[in-house]
Image (tube, rainbow, N blue to C red; front, top):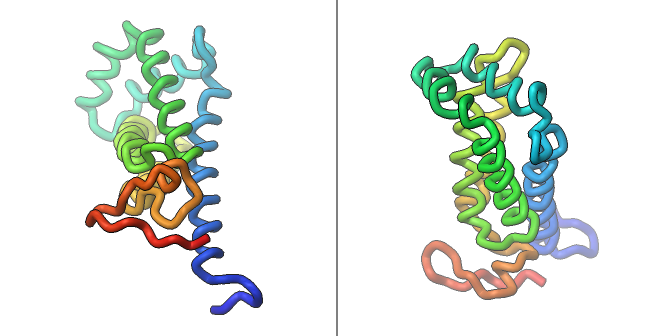
Length: 165
């Protein structure tokens, strides 16, 4: 499909950049329901960690959460905050995009294992989150408007990304 008056490569670049930015904003918005330093406990973060113990996809995971994370909830609240902020900023600005996406994939798998079995939660939501992060793990910031691109970070195979704008 040829867009009238627009280079198709430019259109694809804008579209994929927008998708990456929205995914970065998604990760940053996770802070709104569990803000530090209390992480909205006893509701918020504490409630969801308790649900992970109660309804894990993998029972051993639930035992781990109960034994390690629940007793240290504030520490893990800070770890969660830092990880989600770093993922979000990485994807929002396209800075160390593949690293941010790799951490996003791991964090999304963690969410899938811990939350997909909770009543009225949908596992496909977390699977979709894994796939979106995997997209940017695969392509990085290739052909997008990003700091990585401005700094000249290269493709997987060592070739420079083609200029689209």
